[in-house]
Amino acid sequence: MATPNETSPTAAITYFSSYDYNYDDDPGICEKDEVKNFGSSFLPSCYSLVFLLGLAGNILVLLVLLKYKRLRSMTDIYLLHLAISDLFFVFALPFWSYFVADEWLFGNWLCKFFSWVYLTGFYSGIFFITLMSIDRYLAVVRVVFALKVRTVTYGTLTSLIVWLVAMAASVPGLVFSETVLENDRIICRPNYPKNDMTWKFFTALEFNILGLLVPFAVMFFCYMQILRALCHCRNKNKKKAVKMIFVVMIVFFLFWTPYNIVLFLQCLHDAHIIEGCRISTNLDYAFQASQTLSFFHCCLNPVIYFFMGQKFKKYISLLFKNNVFYRALCKPCGLPDTVSSELTASSRTQSTSDEEAL
Image (tube, rainbow, N blue to C red; front, side, top):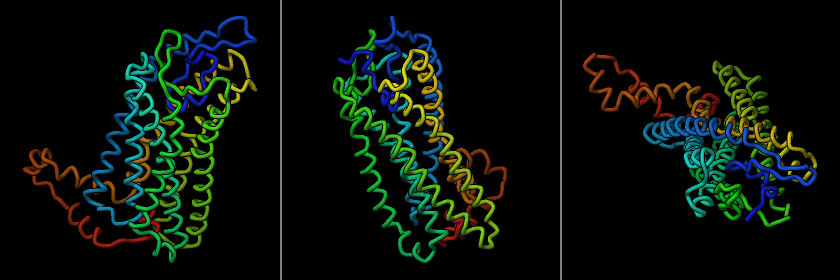
């Protein structure tokens, strides 16, 4: 069983770490009742909101893709898998919500399983956002090459590779996560070998490199090349494409960078490079805020990739017009149904232009 001072900073990756730390250089115990009480009252409601918004938004994305888009392009494949990865991510949130409000009551096996599911959803979501950046780069900058590789077959193959990599990257969460009794409270967190810092630093480094640095570097390169290409062409949709580019980059950077910085600082604190009860307490508060902010990113993916698109509103309108409630309540009013004919005509063609890609 782990002692309080063995709590890993990377426990923050999937759940809350302990709020009581015992430092050798301190005369007593660093009490964190206020941090724990704040998290118990603040986080469950935030987790629940993320769960509801993420579930509704991504299910709506799946319905639109499967019913109207019919997965005829690489972009559609990536959007489908991005929505699935976000659903993976939010699937574990009700359990973490109950955990932070009380304690972990779901057993050791579910502790491992949901830690793995959570991390798989996180990594796959980041990877699919990165793949979509590459897809846009090919569609706008490498148009001739894109005609050969932007196919459903290649999209399905790369998606399979992404899922395998995400699952492999999540293995430490599956292996080391377990339930422990800490301060008369059952918690679910990584429990690494005693006095062994190797896996702690490895998981923190993996999270920062695979979760932020590499994806952001790829996105930055792709979107800078896209901007250069758009600046040398005449297109009525150029302003919308540029707007989408900056929204994707800025949202990704703002929502995930604070979380990764806090995890890195917690890693330094665990290595005793930075020390002190006040620093530890402030890091816990910062972790709660930054983690909640990062969670909301999965709710914004449908907004970024669909609601800013020209056709998605038409698809949503058609989706609701085809449901039973609309037919029962609105059809007798004689409202015109022009969306269906527009979408039927537009769905017969497949474009690789920047409008379609972006």
